[in-house]
Length: 255
Image (cartoon, one colour):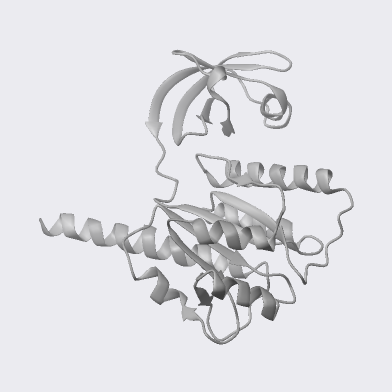
């Protein structure tokens, strides 16, 4: 069982869990005294706790152990995702969280065809999906889902980004993803943008080129807008988590 709490819920000996998380533990999971819970403080620390006191709407758990989480990537991944129809965007959020994204930034582009109705309700649901996915897959943080911005803002933010940044594009004049990832040691920040179902317009690509933001190709096949960010995040994990971690282990073994 994994839950997320803020600092004020943690003291030197216990953690207090309330609200919807407590109700889920009590009513859905039937938490009993003595059972263990993993509590995350949103700062990559995990508290191994034992349920000590359970009321109708609150759980107080005794801290048994505090440890740094090993479940977070060594980079901060920011995914700028063009808004898409139906459940495609929600799918992209859920799976991006599972694959290690730290921040999701929805945006509107020239070819975005999603209406503005119920914007607040949709945004609340997106954040709930991110929180549930983070709990399910063992993350130590709940990735941020920012309020939607415009494509021009995406270009401005990518231009100012100090880390590895690129825009995914299926047209000509791109650099292959392996080339971009292989240029440097693990970056502190990786920020990338994925376009809408109809792709970026020529004007939008010109804006990216004028801002000197690299255009990245994702292979010979055209990927759906909900698939492309997962492709990138999986490649990041492979390159900067799995491969380099294995290489480090091998180096230690040789010594």
